Image (cartoon, rainbow, N blue to C red; front, side, top):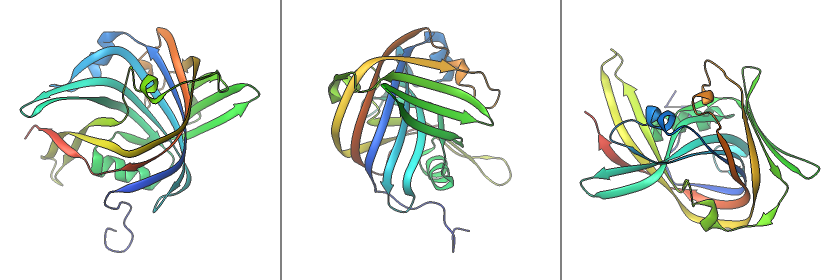
Length: 238
């Protein structure tokens, strides 16, 4: 219960010893548009699949794995324009990560098996849900040195935008918001880039197939530390 066994805590949280595989591919622009809640606007046709291992997260554990699927989005509001990465899908291994992401940030987290591995000269990132490998990404091991600017060029994961939906106990809408949260104190320790592949298997309850891979783009392998700070409300529907 929230009294003696809470699953979530308040920000900020420090993520250390992070290892990330970022796979990017082009999809049908109409597919992105179909998954963006208004008034968000699509920016391009790129899907970014970020498969990560967070080595140390206080209160959550060691070697916490997750996969965040993001598309570039623009919000035009009364206080100006916000560019960020909207998450239509998100998979994690930890119940704490799922509860915190869904209840606090509004991220669409579900439980799955997420892994990063190296086989010879190949980086491999996988997401397995109910026995199906719904995503497999590959890229050459540390193919060529790259930069944070290149990594953030198509879809910038530093600002993550989500659609937060919570109902009252009687079913009435309680929260309907577009939220944004930022990665702060980001230190990228190394970053490599190379061509990547992205294989998607259809699943009725993990529908990444709705963002089909049309053209493989670049992938990145990077290591980092950052602080996950509290977010802000961009748009309130109620």
